[in-house]
Length: 231
Image (cartoon, rainbow, N blue to C red; front, side):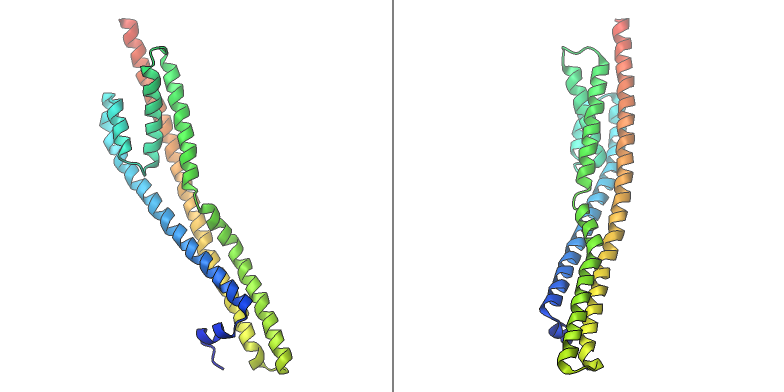
């Protein structure tokens, strides 16, 4: 009996073909998510490394505006977003003549960095929910195809009067959909866990950068108070 993929496809019931098509769509979409998230995270990592090198001397000089301009060049960097938010809030409050207490500017910058970190983390999780859904449901979609294949095999057995030849196509149909479901699900689960781990690392990096910027602003605020008291 011919068991080539073309022959098996032709012998499949329309419901089993529908299951295969659904799994194929899920597979293509999950691959797209994997590639898109990987490239996005790599850009965030690479740009963040460049950003830190560019900011070190600028912040030492206390040139906030230049530091803000530098962060705008690294729009894919998660650290640039957090640091930029802190600098913008700090500068806005510091330039407000109604506010003389540096602690107000420091607290505003801290809140701005916290908000931006949460927004950035949510952006990083974009499409990962779909990846988790595919990893969780693809085996069940394949199992549904398995049930359809077994039903198809028994129907052929009933009409032909039995024999292995009459049920082999249905059994093959059932096993193919099961295997395809696992083939789609396993990479999706692996990728989801991998990206979640990277997001966790990015979250720690954003938290550390926010803390370092808060400490920097505290030192700057202390310096400003010392200068005003001497004056």
